[in-house]
Image (tube, each protein chain N blue to C red):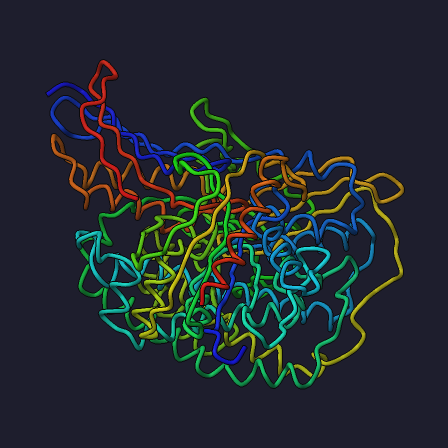
Length: 475
Length: 164
């Protein structure tokens, strides 16, 4: 058999073009595999010249999947540029909206994207390995999963006031207070939400117990871990310093996000348009790190809500207290975070300040530069704005969570391909595992536009001369 | 109007990316043809009149729409398209069929209908109306050819509503 190249290409219409290339050795083993991304970067230029107070309404248009994260990160950067720290009630309300986003996004990912692999098996017939397969296997759970996402969306809608591009967070606070009636409406759905997430955790743990061999050979590798943290090293998704730990769990840095350029830099590779962030002191690639659910739980020593904290204790036993390196445990971490977010909704709604009308600071002390950060569902999202004396933006830098995980996703693809892909015949289940390696990170590659049609997976198998000898396609 | 089957017209796309947001323009035209007030911008909701059809615009087609769609006897999905679809104005019945989308969080109409059937035991008559897009930059306007197609799409939807 000659050496061959396999390309897995999710075809998108406009942007977010990404593909996986697997280079095969003549003996049918994998030589090397990697993911390359053409991520749309023109948005930063588009934002230059805009007024800083416009940004919370402009940047959500980057992404139809996590617009709330961009909305809040932009408002937080605006707080800094305008020198207007929000009153406490405004921060509580912003965080409440953020928890809605975490619940809907994590719930959607587990039940609709990861769930089919876990519940039905990586090698299940693709015709049934989807959410409909889950519905058929467990219809009651499926209805609850849809309700879970809807619950998160309703929190966002309640606060944002409209279905498209909510206008809620503004530099200095938010533009409306929460009513008592809305508070009660959100509370009414909370118990069911927590129960559904707990059901998801039970499914995950049951699956893990039966699939430990896969978990322990599926893209397990050391990296650093990066994310927001509370002063007591508790899980934090909205506000705090950044904590960066090493592959053995020791703290490398704890810093204010305003100084992030002193800590991290971005490496470029000729085969990808998406840069590779890394910890400057360790250099590239030794300084690469992971963000998102796995990264956040690895940097956290505890969680400040009881049910999620109990799960975290279990999570910490998975690698004897050291950072958990298994890519497939992203799914478990995601559910623990969803549980935290749901519990946190209860905490926020019980806060005496949550119905306060003191929601906006209008006293400004403009600054030339400000950085906003939030833990988006997929990881740390950074908005970095430079403004002139009128608050007009002269420079915008956005580091999205998918970018932080770029190296890890590519390495996961390489690891999984080497473990599971064997030629000459490339079976669908092998390909699905490679996809699953990417899916675990829940990347956001192409969500700001879409139209009729899915993202078909195309696999071209090429021989050493570049001739396509086999094409697999799944719509 | 009492015996008219309840219909939902559900359009989706990114209104900030030119032709990708054509569904919002089509829905606005449908409103005008029905003699209803149309919203002035995509952030405004289409008014619920209590009379069929209900008209909703969103950024994406997501799983919870299946619960909404299950409440109707007829559903019309409205979107943009490019590439492989031959017709500039594409109309077709939607058959229930789940299509995996390996990374994205949105559904196809076929997948949505599949969820309606399997989750809620309902089988609304569903159609897809899509219009070819030509430009996808950062703007809220439509390209000229897509704008012309939007008018035709709105007419098609009005006819579809009048079929029953």
